[in-house]
Image (cartoon, rainbow, N blue to C red):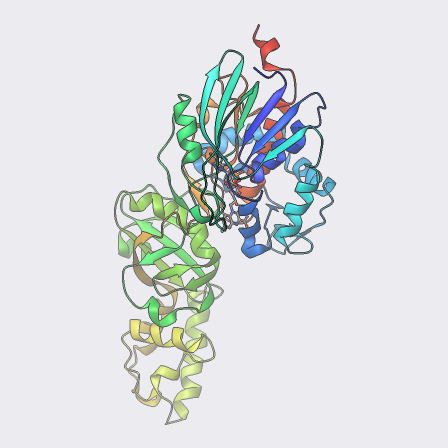
Length: 455
Ligand SMILES: Cc1cc2nc3c(=O)[nH]c(=O)nc-3n(C[C@H](O)[C@H](O)[C@H](O)COP(=O)(O)OP(=O)(O)OC[C@H]3O[C@@H](n4cnc5c(N)ncnc54)[C@H](O)[C@@H]3O)c2cc1C
């Protein structure tokens, strides 16, 4: 067994940070395995290439409810500010958006990866790219890691995969989640963790676009709009965290369901359904509820107005527009909403588009308001892991020490990042957690050798 050698499986956000921190102890040798031909591949795709790496408001409330007690301890041990300072020390300049999201000032994910990789150029760090870890064997005072060389996609020659074995004293499992398999996601890490006897909770997609049962989104495909999005299910207890009041609106009572998510912000209509920040933020709760039954959503297209204000606005508008005899009902909302959205709302309200505004019935406004503020539709399912930005579920947290990320039952084994049963909201929370877990695991793995401690 190679003493003071730390093997890290996965050169993503948490694995790179763990390597940087653990390598500060010069007597440690770090072996970093990555199956891709580059390190930090997923980081490059984050924040649409801009890398939303953290948030001004990091709190356990922004993660799955089952992880919040664990995360309280984590964020006490490595305060969000400490992680931001660590990132700044790599040379990165950070900036905050008005909504609290933190990006590199240059808005370029490549700069984040480059800054992190610069620190890996040290004599005590050995990087093995295009090397997949197939098996981990627990040995006395350490682990044996079995690897196989990965054939690069561009290599057209015949390829005999080289199998090798490496012994190490400590091991950091940083293989990431299942999402985006074409850039490194997969179930490798879960299988390795399971092979070491660790319990896993069920995996599902999070931060994922949603498929709408009806076909109307096709007509709006590509359109973005600021909305309030609420989701309801009969089979759930109402939401009660800071992202919603937990109260039931009159429309909710009409549906007879419980509110399970509520987000405001931009929604993107697609040919299959809905995406965009508001959808992605609501998606975790919706995916969980879909496992139990039907989920209905409701869009408020004008959340900035109260019902009274809307009545006044639309009544005055009708008075003015009805004077012009030639104006038809389908043009009534033009200028408030994008044209295609106006038509979908009018259609939902059952308004005949060819009717002249001067001749609409007295209940015109009454019918229009619910179509604007409570536009209901059913979600049939979520897109798959191919399109999910995070994985919910994973290695159960009761097995992990929140201050060190060491597995309680296996001294010297650490698990970090998305492989754990922790998933954050969209907004920089997942990368922040990946960096934090890598930071704490690296700090601890770089400390006292496990062997001596065990004696
Ligand atoms: C498209 C997209 C956009 C995102 N945008 C954001 C965002 O803006 N902000 C945010 O906070 N989060 C974002 N995320 C989530 C964030 O990227 C992840 O939560 C984070 O990268 C997880 O870090 P990690 O270290 O656990 O895993 P990863 O960064 O995924 O790294 C794991 C690495 O391990 C390697 N690996 C796996 N198995 C093996 C093996 N057996 N042997 C060798 N190597 C292996 C993989 O190839 C991979 O490189 C986004 C995710 C996606 C997919």
